[in-house]
Figure (spheres, rainbow, N blue to C red):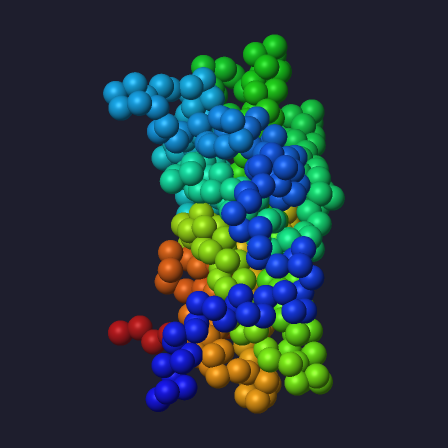
Length: 452
């Protein structure tokens, strides 16, 4: 009992007694009071290519006041004198255009002449779903970045951690990755433009790609109006597609960021545990527990930012994947009649699988965040001082009870079992569709009938 009381009374002093013994002084937490300017943050600079892309498409803008960075939606003015900036107006117009695009071009495409037996109905459904996905992703990206100043909060917390945990933050190398990601988004959407230009050049563009303009312009006859309309359709496809893919790129880059941070922490923690086992020096459990909590605090902001986005991606892309499977099984001859049709369906499949794969990458963060649990279980208790037993138990409970990872509205966390469940669900649906596929009505059948 006396040992427990002594441990409680000395808990606050535990980290101070040992925090400069093995990690160099420059890497200790003595600089907590010094806050690095956000503009000088390594993480903030690394995300510059994506911040530029997001600003162009109205998904994120920021304003600066001194050394602080806020998003343009933050209410910082005096009561009753809140001002609407030009950037806010531009963002509102850009996001609203996505919804106008979905309503005017996606829903209007249905003219009532569709037939369940015709694959054109499913093409229209897929097109409307794609426009809806673009609108939702642009809206969610804007709201996730601006609600409660979340993305600027991540920049501020990263700048603080670069002072508090420099040895961990030095492991971040995102400059090249962000440039490649931004270039990939542009290149991938350029493929869609090439495909649409090919259709337009060969007069193969389906009429349902032109709503609502096909009511006032005869798109079946080449003319100047049709040429202008083709340019507008191609530009809209590029704009909406590029804006829709930005959230995925941000998600995967944040997954890489947190994977790198937790891995750097785990390497330091593992090295100290092994050193303590060899030399018999006390293990600074409380010191490392607090460092891990600081990383978790930063991750919690990102989790709240992506939580709703992750949930809707799983729901919508799951439904879209099922629709694609249905078309491939029941209307294969119609949707794969030409090599070009096969290319279109293949691109849809790759796109859906890629989007689901991107959000599934969050499982690597869950794996690294819980990695210290293995070292704690292997650590010998004789290297843990009495005043570190309570922090040891707290750290153990944090890693073994609370799941750390990107979650879908807090309902479940993206980890390996969740990914296996999603894959199993798709495989089950696919084989059920094959098993219950009705026979072709054109196939001749023979049978005996008795009439009375």
